[in-house]
Image (spheres, rainbow, N blue to C red):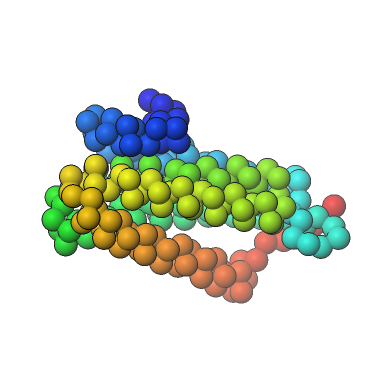
Amino acid sequence: MILNHIWGLYFHPLREWKTIDERHESLRFSLSHILLVALIPAFCAYYASSNIGWNIGAREHIFISEQSATIMAVLMYAGLIAGVLALSYLVHWMAKTFGAKPTFTQSLELAAYTATPVLMSGISALYPELWFVSVVFLGGVAYSVYLLYTGVPILMHIPEERGFMYASSVVTAGLILMVVLMVTTAILWTNGFAPTFEHA
């Protein structure tokens, strides 16, 4: 079922949003979706960092120790899940302003399925060239924004005009959450939590 939604969101998003709206799976189903999909960037980043090495323009690939890679992957996984849950809460909290009355499950569905392309873009870490990962990530963000704009009117049951404003507010909140995650990472790195680097 989860894979069916992923396929549908990529190849016929409008029809898939309507299917999601008609079925309204349980909170547990939406959580299991995000728990599974968030494994992709965490595992790929772990494997690339400890086994392939990152190329960020330097002559040699940069590796980090297995222990550091594991810690970073676990923190990344927790951060991604926390980010999606926080976005779900914001979607739910902002709903009344735009005349929508979703359940928290509907809000989580919107956040989880909208975030899917961004999370799945993490597979690009298996080719750890900074330019490549950046391009794929930006593509994932762009498609996630598209999914959000198409999904809000359907899942929230509001007119497209109000849905556009609502989706724009959610995009802004999502960007703020992304910045918070980046700043938190930077703070941890500068306060003794930087990874241990290794030579090839």
